[in-house]
Image 1 (tube, rainbow, N blue to C red):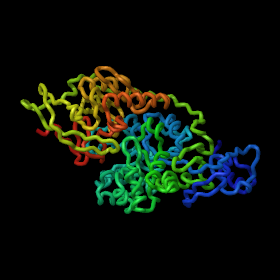
Image 2 (tube, rainbow, N blue to C red):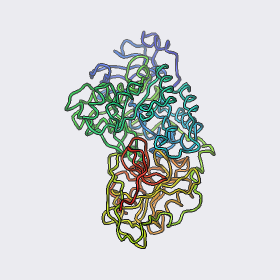
Image 3 (cartoon, one colour):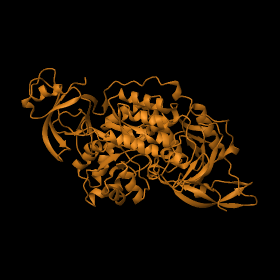
Image 4 (cartoon, rainbow, N blue to C red):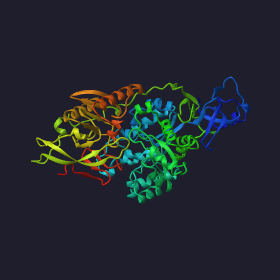
Amino acid sequence: MKNLARNELIDVAMGRSPPDVLIKGGKLVNVCTGEIHAEDIALKGDRIAYLGDAEKLKIDSHTKVIDARGKYITPGLIDPHIHLYHTQLNMTQIARVLLPHGTTAVADGFYAIGIVSGIRGIRFCLEEIKRTPLKIIFLVPALAYYQNRDLELQASPNAPTFDDMRVMLDWPECKGIEEPPYTPITNKDPNLIALFEKALGEGKVITGHACGISQGGLNAYLAMGADSDHECGSAEEALQKARVGMRIAMREGSAASNITQVVKALTEYKIDSRYFSFSADVLSAVRAVKKGHLDECIRLAISKGLNPVTAVQLATINAAELLKVDGELGSIAPGKIADVLLVDDLPTFKISLVIANGEIVVKNGEFLAELRSPSYPDFMYNTVRLKRPLNPKDFEIKAPETKETVTVRVIGARDGTLVTEDLKVTLKVENGVVKQDLGKDVLKIAMIDRFHLSGKVGKGFVHGFGLMRGAIGSTYTPITENIIIVGATDEDMCLAANELAEVGGGMIAVQEGKVRALLELPLCGLLSDGTAEAVIEKQSRLYEAVKQMGCKLADPFHTLAFLGACPEIGTLKICEEGLLNVLERRLENLILE
């Protein structure tokens, strides 16, 4: 269906010319007024032309009439903060997965693709997703430039320059800046402040990232223009931030699950919901298919006591207002883009029809649009490089001479949160080497440089995975995007790392010298160039293999990914230099005594 001039809507609304689509007899969830009422809706081209009684319209044989009796009608759902690469799907395939769940627009800056392949990789992903019905609200990926610079770690040599950041802010698709870290703002970094001022001067949004921010820092961050956060872990934290004017995206995804806690700000503290929305942030393909996306957020929030109409508002108009795109998206009203859902029931939020840009793209769960992934450029392949093949000795941790036991720092990992613990555990020493202790659930963890041919292998220990054998690894590691491995034996860790380099990136499970499951991610070591079905099948096999190896985590590879150094997300993480105390911004000694 064509994009049209707005003046064509006038004749439809005045009954002079027929609409292309008429949705008749449904119950509109009116996110503008908070009501549910009967309404007919007429579409022309990619926009909504009319709300009211269809008897007033001119209907002819070319008008497609959709019988919505017994259905609820809502706007398409909008995620104001998601990094699509966490699904490991290319941009064409992610559209195929998210649209059936009612998601018609997402905000992303493709920061990880930029870290690996620079501004040209970002531009490629942007152009690819623009060819799908899934709308992209492009934001300048601040993390592609600031990736761990404030932690003084070596950045990828391919990452965008600050001049590239300015260039992207001027792209016609750009609506603002994506989650710039707050430390450069509180330290008054002149470059980032200038970028903020340029964005604000152009009326663009600055979405925030306020994990662990202090009260003074929070006020400074807001004062400079950042106006949202997706890192709240409790109702009280959300309440504190909302009271000073910060918009809150309640997060429910594969690495962090916060809606159950944060929604209490609305259901128990009874504050106004207008500054609240939903976000997945980190979403695996398997979770998206099996549980859903924003539709699952709506179901969960309703089950925790949130009014169903309010839940729909959070996923639509509130998200649009957060991103400053509510003039085009987020509500069903004349002139808005025609993103419309037909839903059987609000508490279960079962979607029977998805209209995006005026076109029916999903009906009864079947994806109707014809999409084909493009040919991917050479620069997105073969990005995982090692100085030399690794051997098991590269993963050994030497103990001080004469020691039979040592106390070490251990990274504590848990389901549902990106924040880790700084634990202390006593481990045995054998032949001068500190050993894992499977009985205490203390495994070895390592991060391996894949960009600089430095040969650096940062090593430590981790608690929380429950592996009783083998090793798992990945080249997907926000924000460094280096190789990360966790294992019960050095031999299996070594095999996992070498195999990932050999295939050009991916996720892997190995046991006793054999590969048990592998998901190849040849595009920047982060994305598949295959179909969604192939990714989901291989990722499901990986999860099952890791479960059989003893792992108790719901999303082991997404939990593993965030054990790497991430600016401002504490506490203890691994980097290619060793153990990093994120909040103190210093490397820590692994062995304490």
